[in-house]
Image 1: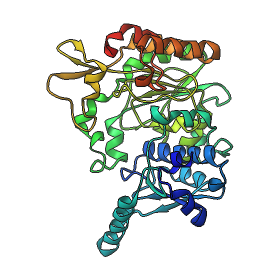
Image 2: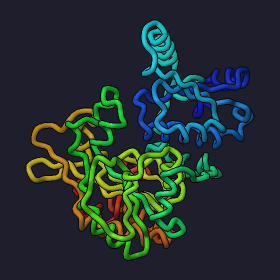
Image 3: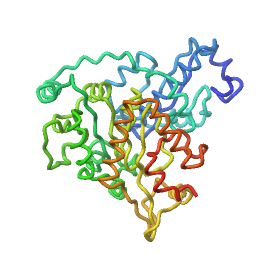
Image 4: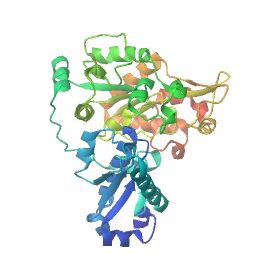
Length: 382
């Protein structure tokens, strides 16, 4: 069992002596990777800590560059130690020394060893641990304060149900992400971006169901849409604490192929995920449903095998384009998703039926594709 956790036979002995474990976080500096690595590692630790070797073990996370959410860092610091190298702030000999230290640690890293590279434990292959555990920050107190919260409270009735809408926006990446370390966030990958207009029919329906909708994102991406019950949080200015507050207390998230997915998943919130460009994205939260995009060539859908052969690190090959869900697809799937949240028994039946349509449990992992989408696109899994 311990070999599964540490993957090297001496690791339990070393950990018993030194009572530490070092995890190297991503150099990309993105909030999504920070959330998935830290939350996943801590959930795994708490799941296995019943073993004596792990009870007193201290986890040390080493973060090479910026921390994307200082409030979240403070919350997680109650459960682990963080060493922030801040390589982007140092130059000259000090920078070279820190880079050398990081390279030595990376060279010594073993998968789940005493020193290990952080990994996305929200992936389908490890999502069972995620789904078995409560959120690490389950008891996090979020005292809302500040100018942004006052603006939010003055316009939104936070005692009523609300959901969040967050979707991939190139303008956000340009302002808040280091493109040199995140080439997938640059303009050549904007073909992955959803269109806000395709969400409007579903937003209208949600408001008619007395569910408020709050749009997250970048204020430099203006939208021409107003309706009572719809609020544009991006116009209030960004706040680390308020960003967490909204995710912690929302009813569910509508995620359009963006990293905010992990902001909601660390609190086990149900997620309606649209426009996924990797069909093997894991959806772990109870009630999560995926309505992905499809790779097309010459008017025909690529199979799952052909889609997986496309590198996510490069722009699309010649002759291939990404076909996004339509506004009607989002509306109809979204309606089934919201209704299923009220019926957990029906929820498990829906997931079981989706597996049966796809005929391959091992490929799907814990991904919860919408049943109707699977029926229409069964040829993808041939």
